[in-house]
Length: 263
Ligand SMILES: C[S@@+](CC[C@H](N)C(=O)[O-])C[C@H]1O[C@@H](n2cnc3c(N)ncnc32)[C@H](O)[C@@H]1O
Image 1: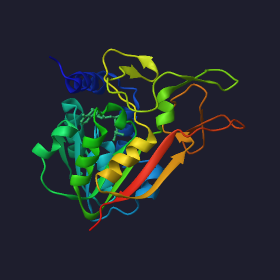
Image 2: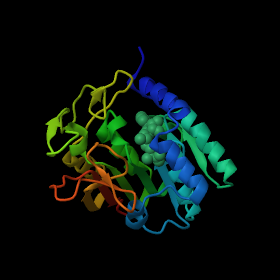
Image 3: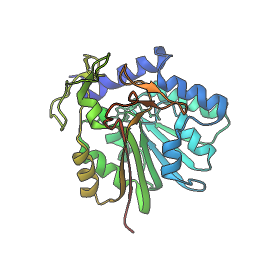
Image 4: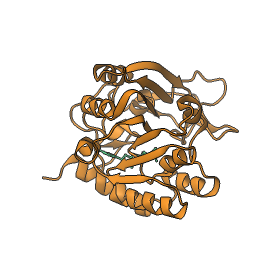
């Protein structure tokens, strides 16, 4: 029987090869032209990475991974999509940036890597693809050195369960559960899609999973800005972030989280 992971891998391989207008290809183009695809948020909140080892989970085509390397980190990126990892390796070679990339399902990572890292990082569209949050949190924690850091930024779980009317007044329809469903949703951007297996997690579930894995939270921040035009009503600001129209009550669109592994 085809697994959830096989289905998502095939879909991501197709997107990497053919969806050349995607945010991911734009990240690659930004890295090629400026040396960084990172957003101000994670650069500011994670802080100085120079001289540190950094593991990037679900790194896609590696643009962010290589951007951390340009900031002095010694980087390893992993992703389920072999096509994405092939592109990441090409990008590392073309930009002469030292990096290691591994094709693997995150849940099989302990079969590929045994060392621990100063920083584990993951960002922008990651939890949605994962079937088991507790196992994810245990894997995250296992790969951090004692005294090391975990940082993530992802779509706020509110945005995964709401569809937003395309015209004023601002109104919302619930299209998916807020908390984790056992069976995959097979939904993307609020729309049914048979080629994906997706899951939601509430913010409480994310925080609890990481605490139960032994991490100590430094902060959980909720942001009313998004990295792409998730809903038609969002408007782009001067810094490139997508925000709710002025004068509307904003719901969070992203959350970011930092945690430490005790020594
Ligand atoms: C929205 S992208 C994240 C992109 C990321 N912000 C970046 O650095 O470009 C989600 C990534 O998760 C990967 N993925 C999905 N399920 C996975 C799994 N079980 N294990 C590892 N990677 C997975 C996909 O192949 C895809 O590259």
